[in-house]
Length: 315
Image (cartoon, rainbow, N blue to C red):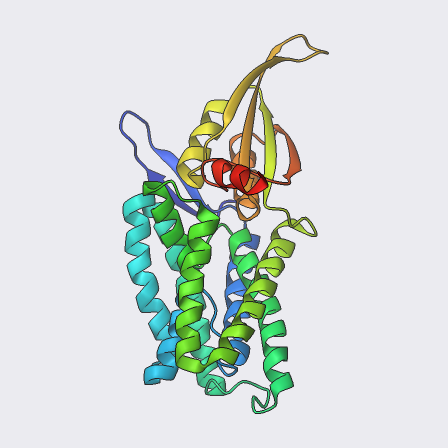
């Protein structure tokens, strides 16, 4: 399929470069369907059951029960601030992707909230229905977010905050994201009670595994080790790994045993949620590249778990 939307990027000393916001029509389908599914989980399961999700979703739930403000509107206001933050630190394209994903999610939350009056489809006076809301809401939320990520966009929230903090501190992305979500869930517990907080933890656990399932199938390890073999386009791939994913890598020089020609090999370690974006980058720059993806059982160092902390625990 042809390119759907393109932006022209200008960099110092470079010619105009065509940037594709969506590579295929299927990306738009993933975006819209994912945002709708995630919003359905929020408005029909999470909010009626007083379950606080992470990020802007959780903040929207808290403000809904404090002031009865529409949850989708609150989410949009929060994500506008995060959009500005993302643009400032990571560029316009990153920010616009976050804004599109979070904007659609907020719009659908308001729509489903209006249709159901945020009362859901289950009787929340029955404790079992609250548990069912945490389970099914977590699954649907994870599926929705996973589809949005597959489109190349994201739903904003604590991901942006965590990436910004990690860019200026030695803290790992996972640790900062967990801390941000923990604060929001704790605030939700203070507003809506301990039971809601405990069910929120269950929902977030299921949510994270559902996201991994959509992005990676059954592979749910922390990260992936990606080895990229490209004869002519390694500089372009390396540049986009740094610029688009905010990751680094290691370039190795080898020799093909059949052709006896020199070959470049780029090794990049990425979290599960970034593998799809990396695959798209490789395909756009060199469709003939050879790519080897393996599970990284444990990743220690900059951007992941701190080596020193893990070593001290094991001793």
